[in-house]
Amino acid sequence: MPVFNRGRGRGVRRASLSVISFILLGLSTPAAPAAGQAAVEVSGRVTDARNGGPVQAVGVHAGRLHTTTDRDGRFRLAGVRAGSEVHFQRLGYRDAVVEAGAPTLEVTLTPLPVLLESMVVETERGELLASNSAMAVTHMDASDIHASAATSLAESLDRWEGISLSRVGSWGSRPVLRGLSGERVAVLIDGNRVNRACTYGMDGALATIDPATVERVEVLTGPGSAAYGSGNVGGVINVVTRRPSHARPFAGEIRASGSTAVPGGGLGGSLTFAGERYALSTSLDGADFGDYSTPDATVATSGYRHLTGDVSLDVRPSSAQRVSLKGQYYAGRDIGWPMMGGARIPEESRKSLAVDYGWQAGGAVVDGISARAYAQKLDHHMVMSMTMTGMNGMPMTSTTDGVSFSETAGGRLQLRLSPGNGVQVDVGSEATWLHAEGTRWVERVMGSMAPTTETFHTWPGVQVLDLGAFAQGDARLAEGL
Image 1 (cartoon, rainbow, N blue to C red):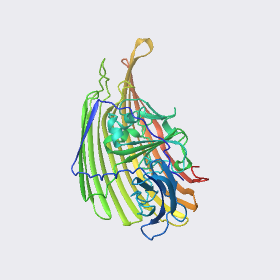
Image 2 (image 1 turned 90 degrees about the vertical axis):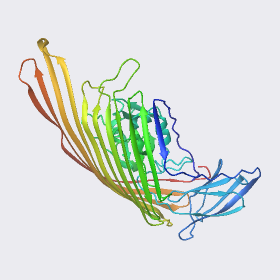
Image 3 (image 1 turned 90 degrees about the horizontal axis):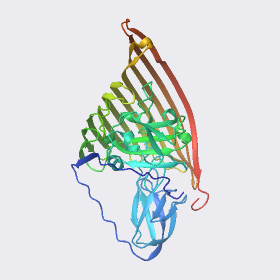
Image 4 (image 1 turned 45 degrees about the vertical axis):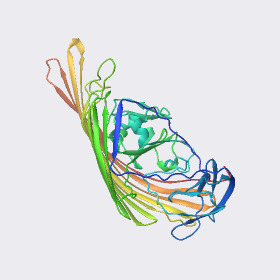
C-alpha cells in the first residue's frame, strides 16, 4: 500500500513558558545531495539484511512519487529527478535513503522489531498509532509539546486538531475528543491502558505525566479500531515517553523550564548508556508551580508540585529481536482543584512496570510478533471542605476526606500477518485485570451540634477481568487504492 499521511495536528504556540535543553553531546546531520533536473526511472529490489530474502510491502517514495515493493521485493518508480533521495520505509525495519543516481537500485533493510509501546500507522511523518485504520490521526512530538508552553500534558494538547479540554485546573484537565471524554476516551502510556483512581473522575489519566518526559503523543479521533478494546468511542490517546537510544555510547541532557502565568518552574535530566546490544536510560524530573495568575486576580488552590522518575532498558538478543523493560514513578503533592472550592489533593502517585518483546520474523505469512506484560497502580488522596447556610440560617461545614486506588495488570500478544501481496492483517488477544477501591469519610458540623461522620465505600473492592481477541487488516486493490 502506498504511504499516505492520514492526519496532522496544528498547535497553538504560547510564550508564557520557556523550555531550555542543554545537549551534552553534539549531533551531526549529513548534508542532502543536490537534486538534478533530469527525470529518470528507478527500479530495483529490496532484501532483508539477515538472509538476503525479498521484503514486500516496503513503502518507496521520492518527493510526491509513491509505490510499494511486490512479493519478490521489486519496485519501479518513474519520473524521479536524478540525484534526488529515494526513501524506503517498512514496519519492522530501519528506514533507508538511497540517492537516485543509477537506474537499478539494490537496497538492504536492517530489521528493527516493533514493540507494542507504539501502535503503527504508515505516514510520511511516521505516526505510530492505528495500524490498518482509516481514522484521523494527530501526531505531536516533543518540540510541539514544549512549544505549547504548557505546565501539564493535557494543557499542551488543547486546540490541536479534534482535541479540546474539560478543565478542572491546569493540572487535572481532561481531554475531550469529538465531544466525548471520561471512559469514552482510552488513554495509554507506552501502549498500556491507564484507569483512573479518583472516584470523582478528575485525574483523567494524563494528569500523572510530566510533559518533559514525553517523546511524542499519538491521538486517534473517532471510534477506535478493534485493536484497542472497549472504551474508545471518542478516540485513543497514546503517550510515548522517552526511550533509550543506541546511537551513542553515552548521552545526557539537562532540562529547565520557567513560567510567569503559572509561577514556578521545573528541572530535570537524563543519562543514557549504550552498547552494541543494549541501551540503558534513567531520567528524573521535578516541578513546583504556584497559583495561576490572571490579569484580574490569582486563582486560589491552583498550584501543585510533582516528581517523575523513569528507568528504561532496551536489549537486542539478535538483529531481529528486541526486549524492553521500563519502570516509571510519578508523585504529585499539594494539588489544588479550583473548580471545587477548598478542594486539595495532598498526594497522587502512579507506579508502573512493563516488559515488551518484538520479533521481526520476516516470514512469508508471519511478518512480526509482539508481546507485552505490564502492571501499574494509581493512588489518590483528596480533601474537600465546604461551608454553607443550612436550615434556620445555621452555618454548616462539610469536610470530605477520601482515598482511592486502581490497580491494572495485563498481557497482550499480537501477530502481524502478510498472507498475500498487498494484504496486511493484525490478529491477537489481550487480557486485562482491574482492581479498584475507594472510601470517603464525610464529617458535618451544623451550628453548635456535635459533628457527625459518615463513611461511603464508593468503590467497594471492584474487580474486573477483561478477555478479548481482535483481528483487523487492509488489502491493496490497485495502485493508489
